[in-house]
Amino acid sequence: MKKANKPFLPLWYILFGYTVFTFSSENYVTVLNCMLSTGHTARIQKQGRLFAPLLFRGFWEETLNKHRVSYTAQTFGLPRLFSRYRWRLGLFIGTLLFGAILMIGSSVAWDIEVEGNKALYSSDIERNLSEMGLEVGSYLPSLDFAAISNEYCLSHKEVAWMSIYRVGTTVKVKIIESEAQNSPSLPPYANIVAKEDAVIESLGVVHGTALVKKGQTVKKGDLLVSGILKGDQKDTLICAEAFVVGRVEKEVSVFIPYKQTYPEAQETTLECVTLDFFGKKINISLKSGQNAESCGTIVKEEVFTLPNGKVLPVSIYLTKRVSYEQKEVLLSKEEALRLGYTTLKNKLSAMIQDGTMLKKNITASATEEGIYVYGTVCYSVDIAETRAFGAES
Image (cartoon, rainbow, N blue to C red; front, side, top):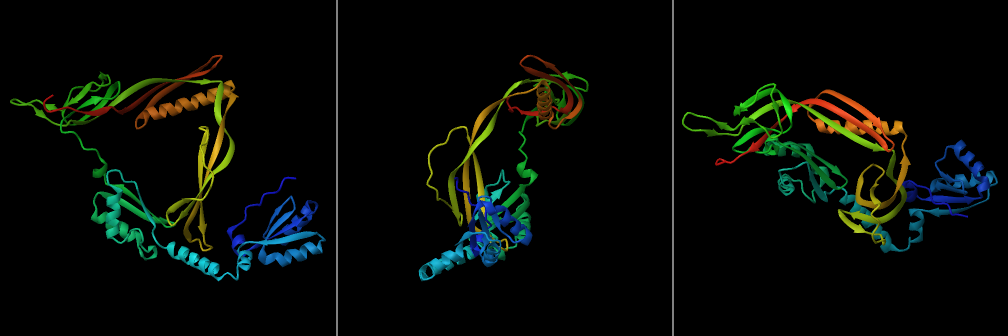
């Protein structure tokens, strides 16, 4: 007979101890009815095992005896472990010291992560925060994250917004850089050219000389606004600036075969167990080797927390591998048609992006191998593209 696996038990079961009552599977219904009628917290398995908190061991012994259920009982958890090693003073003191380190360490910043910066260096941001009192080793309860964020933004104009918060013993710093910091610098001399084949609907020139007008048809790469200003004595070179809205028409098609293949998860295996102890990752598993290319990776983090919700600086990362197998399915015409419409609409949306849809037309045709879906779309969009040129060109 296959041995039953232990069910998931809350952390407080292990901390305060629990009792496993083993009985005949024929008495499963009787024990289950007792548990439901009394409302006592417990875990029960059809194979004939009851997991109950150590505090209620006496209650369950009395209940099982009352219903004439034969059983054996075993105690597990920290209380049993402490009773086994109660005469080993060194182990007890070491456990207390370990607990004290965890309690104290959970209030200290062990790592600082900066997110959202593109032009600014994370090291520069961390150095500036260090001057304000936030650094690795800082006592977190003494810090006012909101005040530090406001002070940073006021003293560093390149940062428009900052948010600081903690996840366990890691301090997360999210920033948004100012527009001036993120905007690409314009070239000294540039023309405006068309980035799409289009019919011009409107034209607004900020700097430069317009070479096209409303209603004109242009091709991709055609010169729209010149960065050369003609003068009586001398030409002036500038960086042309303009917005040019054009009407674009395009055709798109997709083919959806009736025979489709997709990956199907077959098996999940535990590959690696990593202990994160105060920011230091330690591999505590013995398994090694390479997996097949068809395997995907799932990383699950388990964080130890105290009853009051306080996060301890110790985490366990479980890295699992999922193997996939290509499975073939045969779509009906209706299913292939729905998939074709969805695929085509997604393509059209990606094509238009910041443009405005004016009209679209979608048709479909079926063959022996699959479904063809055709789409014609008309939309308006800014077709202006800045193209630099040299002063001597």
